[in-house]
Image 1: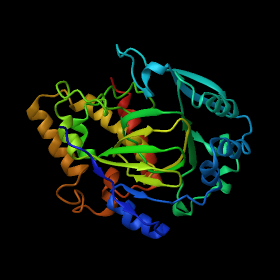
Image 2: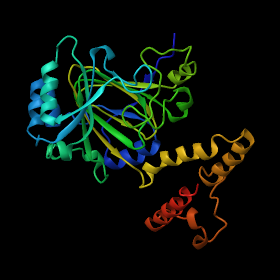
Image 3: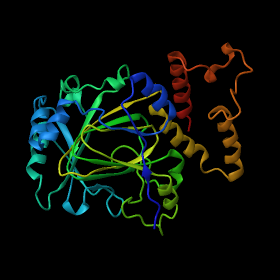
Image 4: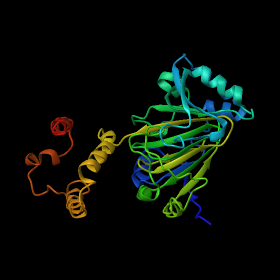
Length: 338
């Protein structure tokens, strides 16, 4: 029998200060039961699917939304096509209200298509929703809410570069998380051609092929899981891998991403460039560059420029806006070299 994921730790609703210092500071996922149970959207969802849809439509102003639509045969798992040359779904655009009404129309129907729309900014899609359904826990953070809706779906194991709080509004969601150090056991697909923005594990979590992916047993031994009901929330730290399953015929989730610095979006790009420049070198030369990264990037031996006066630390100095602009220009010149 393969190992089973352990439950994610659950906590009481913290203060904003405790959340940032103790929860985000610990870099460990937690479940916060009932965090948004008082939202009008959640109250409506607990009444009926039609009631929560009516609540959402109050804020609809006709903005266009993109949805993934797959045949019933994919079983809600949005993924690559069998030959890896494309995907097993198509993208369709239409008004938010049109999408919502379409979902309502296929609830309970046999052989319904799989439908999934994600990361839709409520400020554009549903102006006023955030004010009617606030999240004081994240006060002071630049974390605009985004809405996700669809029927039963499986979003395969992936990571986000941002910290994340995800709140279930309607339906149920199962989250399965893997710590960042398990990346080598997740058998990641193409880094640049992805299903929905971030690289994805090639392993089908609910039916893993251990002959093809033997290291996945070790990943499962380190995995955590939780099932969330309307009103519940989960904190997922940046770079924690996670699969998200929507379990009901109609599901709504609102999430909040935020970054710890303006450099967050560039970190993955830096890794990809390092893989190009260093990853194919002979082992002994990779080891030499590993020592360089350990010293200047990961700082395994302390501050590498502590022996220099602050005015002489240049690109290794404190990351001010001026230094960021200088480094970007410095790197842009270098990237133009053949």
